[in-house]
Image (cartoon, rainbow, N blue to C red; front, side, top):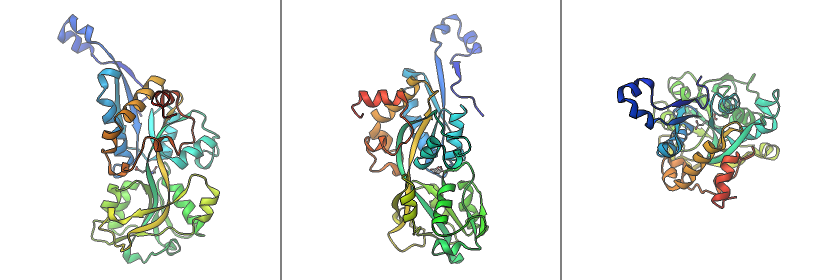
Length: 327
Ligand code: GLU
């Protein structure tokens, strides 16, 4: 794993020799910044890419070079940011809340005091897809089936468990639960190795395009009976998944009811203000270009990007929001 914020000189010794002594004047320090994302068929991966693209255009001005890493998702990203292995990451708003309060995956470790919010991005819905031939029309029909609930580092695993519990199902005893990374699930459902899979992602995503374009017919299963979740957890909201994004799905209805969260961009209190400031500023000052980089950002506003966050804002981000009159 790369150690964060490696300061290095852009001009290597060999190049100095090659170019002669005058080249030493061109020496500049580059700050390497790594962004943790998710599986490559999700929306976090292209989101990290979109942020990196915007920021890297100003490499000469800031001396910042952003790179993107595909990871296991929200929980992995938050933990890697806190340990200093990543500088930034995309994480579900519910996972940000839990980390800050010391809940769920952080119940043993306690509140994660160094986690900092930068901004929020697109909406994500919690969805269950199932093979039509598996006859799964509700969560109750998952009994006895083979179902992916997600890898441990993912954000969506807990969403799946919450949805199952709200519907009276126990993932450890009622069916064969798989803990696969999201990127593997569409292929395995097409191969007949699993019957159904949960995922929490923005739309459209490559994951569902892949899952719904094979020969095995796939449908989105409504996630109902969630009132208890909405009452208990402040970070969940009612939502629906639009089928117009996935014309290969077997659904005939325009939208499938479920619940959702937000994708957020987080960092550590230990990341320098000037780095967080530069990234925040570039994304916001190039907002029109940024929102064009993925269809999941349709309808996004600058004001909305400052909501859905539970960690304190990083001072570098806050500096920009104050300057821009957003705070
Ligand atoms: N929300 C997912 C997770 O944290 C990742 C979705 C994505 O990669 O777009 O597990």
